[in-house]
Image (cartoon, rainbow, N blue to C red):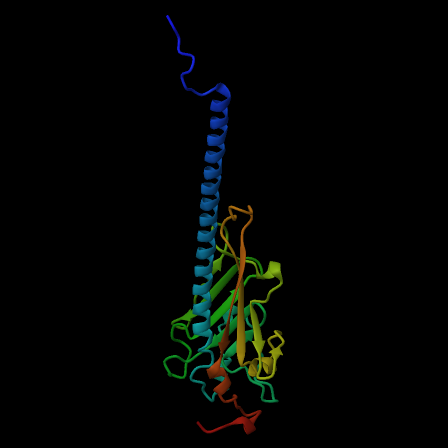
Length: 249
């Protein structure tokens, strides 16, 4: 029997090279797919956090914009703050400085009133609203319902797996207050509150789970400015102590 030694074929070395090249290509494709999945997952987490934060900012801006709405000339109405909120607000000072409808204003808390139904009372739903950041991870909202204090509800943040707030960790105040000439202190004094024209709300939010690429949660900063038109245009309170401020309605 005669064997044809000229038949074409692959040597062992050629086969091994082909296997190595194929495995390298497959590994590269797998790596690209894994990276794409991680990027997509991280993007989804960021989008969810952004949507949650923007929704809360929009709600806050809408409600805060109504602070001091339908201002009345009886200052005592605006100082009848819900006792359950534990806000110690002094009476109207003799120098005429007034809080109007903003009852509390500091770096982490903002409480305000508005007479939505024009009945010269604040017993209707949502005529008292208070936003409070706990200095850790959670922002809550409390309202009056039918003249009774409602329980504060967390609207952003809390324990996992929720989007958390990291203002304190980043040293960023939740609320900053501005007059017509510049930034006011956040001490909540009556004079500063009387002069508030603009409120800057800033939320440092953190994704609810770790980023697939970095292994750590991602933090993002969102902010919005609110011009408190009703508070600006409302007349100051007047009483027996400061009759010079009294204006006929």
